[in-house]
Image (cartoon, rainbow, N blue to C red):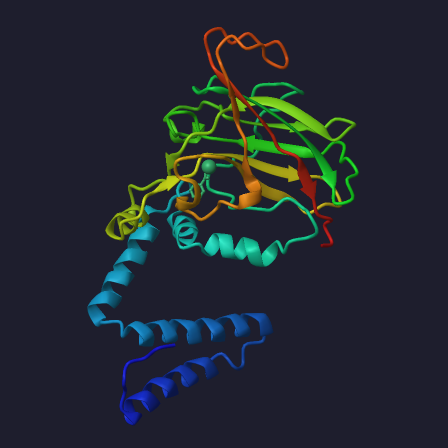
Length: 297
Ligand code: BEZ
Ligand code: FE
């Protein structure tokens, strides 16, 4: 930590306060809670001392957190959004999903998953009328030895070409989301939409912070997956579009090299893999093979 030159008295005063606050947690019965609170105190005081936080800046921070609280409802979670744009959500995912052999990497969950999305069969369409360019998605779910995982549940969800999830419309539509199960070979296939970039909700305090710091609210184009099967670690991830205009500048730091996939575009009139008639519409296809880590990993 780099602190400016401080007199010995001032330094002693600052350090003594940290130690006193840390000791105030000494008698906590819960050892893990004690460890977390004491480390939090050390890091927060370290931050205040490093930047020599002014009282006015502290007031601004308190107002910012108050605004985050006021913006949070049962449909909008501004604190999770704050964690996302600070890279904390991705750091927690890294800490808790240590790489296991060649298991597929996890990324951020995001606020737009909804329990109970409709079931589709093999080759079904998860768009349910959401506007966008059709995208044929295929892949295979296996374990780290290459054995197919039959009956794995795959939840998929994504924004439409206007950058909105169904839950962001003021009606009760269900679109751009579904679940399906892998077949006896661990394989799956379905129609989705070619992902496009969209902004995270930026009309609240987090959006104001991004704008004040010259940051974009845009997320790199992606399609969400959650893959679960008994005895395996549930995988929450996305696939990203290679060549996407946002790419590594993703506002929530969710992009990982292994999750960037080739979405191949086909001219209008090109026959589709399942014979679906798309008329004058272009379409894309992508392959995403998924490797699940064991639950014990
Ligand atoms: C999303 O991808 O849906 C998302 C992730 C983090 C924050 C906002 C949106
Ligand atoms: Fe998303």
